[in-house]
Amino acid sequence: MEDLSEVLRKLATRDSSEDNPYRDAEPDREDDGCSRCRGRGWFTADVPVGDPAFGQVVTCGCQGDRVAQERQARLLRYSNLASMKRFTFSTLTPEGRGPDSGVRRRFQAAYEAAVAYADRAEGFLVLVGPHGAGKTHLAAAIGNRLISQGQVVFFSHVPDLLDHLRSSFSPSSEVVYSDLFDQVKAAPLLILDGIGSSNPSPWAQEKLRQVINHRFNMEMPTVVTCTGSLRDVDPYVASRMMAEGHSRVIELGDPAVGRGRLGAIEPEMLRRMTFEKFDVRGNSPNADQRGSLEGAYLAAKSFAAAPDGWLALLGDTGVGKTHLAVAIANEQMKNGRTVFFVLVSDLLDYLRFTYSPESTVTYDRLLDDVKNTPLLLLDDLGREHSTAWAVEKLYQIISHRYNSRLHTIITAVGDFADRKDPVASRVKDPSLCQLIHIDAPDYRDSGRHSPRRHARGPGTGLSSVTPQGGGRQ
Image 1 (cartoon, one colour):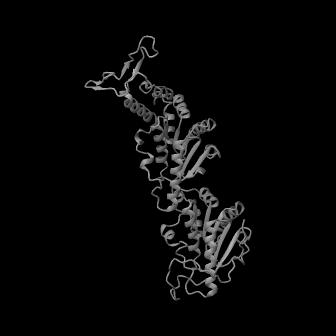
Image 2 (spheres, rainbow, N blue to C red):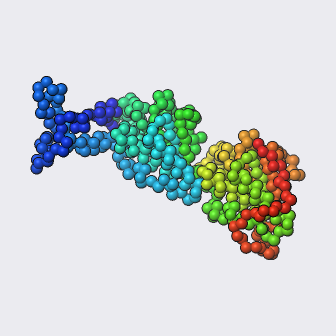
């Protein structure tokens, strides 16, 4: 690898054709090349003795394109982006090609942030997401944009970089370790692709710490991509990558992919369970039941527009609790917000499975995801098999989110009024949770007359139904 100082020296070679006052504006061409330089690519200025330009060798204007092309070739060769020069902003769809609107919105935000960073590279830009989310393409597009502007960039996949550093200790290595390490630390723009994609040894971890800490302290532009979660990254490195005022962290892709899809809402559910498709006319309800459906609909719409505290939707099976919860998720995901939706019994099964050697997700990681996700939808709370272990896990999740005031939606069959356990106590707190009781016939009961399911919201008149609690944070 060419030394960075040598690369910079070569890149600084002056193309005198741009500022030579003696060059022809449009030099004539002859069969053997340019009429001024005769195909040599240089000439001496035809000026009197004593003129400042007398005797100077000047690069001919006809060589401008060649010099620019050679300069960019050197930049690409140094940057390690030569094989990725097709990764540009023009070869990307700004809104991405994700499976749902939430993923596409996150990608568009990342795309816009990357373009802005390429225009003004300052601090750290950290792109986080699962494999295939487009992180590397965006990072390479930043590098290629800056190279096209004549700037020096160094791109490296982190595991490859660590391998190169190790190999530099070999007696047969053509690169001295200290030279390579200094090149990485001193690159005008450094792109590190794939932090967290491997388990580094203590030595490798120390090298990453030195690089990141040096660039953080010197406020040098750095782009980092991370697969999975920053919680999997060495805390020392992650603290600098997430430093407020110095770093911008952008999440893209589907966060549920890294969890084996746990927490994701099936596309068919997102398609069917919207506010537009929630029929408040129900399944032949009486007036009070119709009012109950309308009240639940309005409460869910209000929460979707401006989440505040917790929302608990209570009622018998088939009254529309899950539909309204998913409709809220739909609206939040359209705004680019991460939502974790899970059936409580499935969540407990997944937590148990993390103890298996076959699990690719650790118990601590999954539990931490559920406890700290920005918006959690716990579906069918209370129907799970309540072993002592299950009760303890649910208490840990509910208690953490209660103390942290994290937005949470709960659906449950029945009522919490007679429950005295610690979980029910927090759900019933009117200062945090709004309890909505839905008293209506089962939509799925084909034995009753069921009206046509048009996309229709509530009418103007509501029956006398008042949500319990209704408190806010």
